[in-house]
Image (cartoon, rainbow, N blue to C red):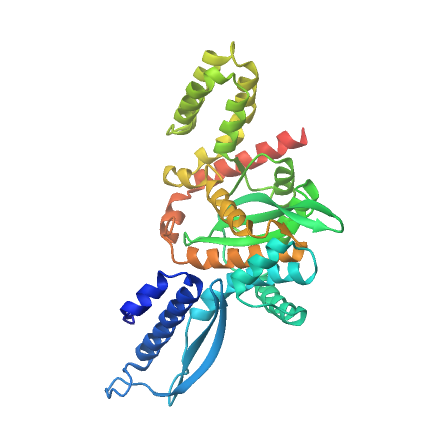
Length: 413
């Protein structure tokens, strides 16, 4: 890895602590990124400037200046040029500008279209350090839209045994009204144990039709090899699973299930009930979990009848995961992973508040999901392909298939 040294003199340090902090930190960011570019150049050429080595693979050929708009303002980077070898490559622009471009494009679009308030205009100035014309905004939007669309519609060429589905909502302006649009997301683990974001889209609401359209799109792109789908108990998701993947069992998110049960109990019993339900979830076998469930029903039926009805009705769908090998159960018994992702999407959207249109939601949230997907490719695997193959025995497959068939019969009834 290239080594990087950044030196600050006393005057620069004092300036960073002065009133003009934005300009000072912008200068620091500019110098730091230029140092990174120099270090990347030296690493790729296997030689420092004017250094002669046997490993040298090319020569420096000057620089080209490139402006980069950041939240601290516009900075100028001196990008090295190489000759007599491979051209210079850097990840700075791809990694740094995608979500920045999404935010800038969305904010600028609000200003240009007259949708924003004075506060949004001031935020725009603070974030970008300059004004944007309508033509420049259109060009930024077009380039980013193409990247997001390519990522969102890419073919799914490997199998994804485990899928998690969820939706969150964003405020969007429609004519003179502000409404909430549903943002649907599919989070998956492939056969190699790596997690991916395999689908997302903006819809007017969560419904049977929108979830069916969403899952149909995933299936047309090649989604296959699915063993289990985890989600909350939204009827639209359950309907779509039965329509598009009738052979796949549904796992009701245990977190949402427990919350539904506990919320129906009198407040003075909720803490104790929560503890007993968690103990039920941690059982090593389905038979043991059934015994714990029956004990809970006996303890609380007289004082929390509504909660016990909810517990009984949702038990089987919340225990689908018990058919999996034990080491996999903790990963797919809840939709917590995608819930954390949704919280990040909400955090990124806070500065926008009300989106000007659905396209701007897709642009900004799509860019954030692209970033997150890149990060996931470098995280720890949930399992190896060999471990998954050896653990998913014929008996496990038959149990999962039997659960899916029983769930289909229950819905049909």
